[in-house]
Image (cartoon, rainbow, N blue to C red):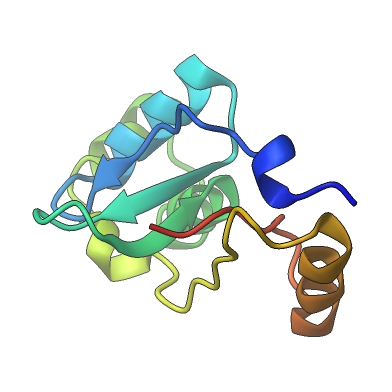
Amino acid sequence: MMKVKDVMTRDLFVIGDWNKLLDAKRIMGWAKIRHVPVVGKDGRLKGIVTLRDILSASVTSRAGLADLDSDRYLAEICLSRVMSRDVKTVGPEETLHSADRRNSRRETSRKPRPGP
């Protein structure tokens, strides 16, 4: 059976929890990704920020603003305020079938990724 390690991304883009939402938006745009793990100063996983988090913060909080004004707003919001903290991880030795079963029970749109 295939294992998580056979398909996982090994070179992740991560961002520190002290960074701002605009930093995450730029990483996502540059790397063409929609989810970025958030780490603390110790390098340990603290949460995840998604493109949906960024869009939600910019649309609901600053409706009707031009992109430039929205970016100024995002530059003020710390990731730790909006990131999801309840992140579930799977180990690299877990089978894809098992990881997928656990993921479907969680009712999440994010694919499982190996933990630290």
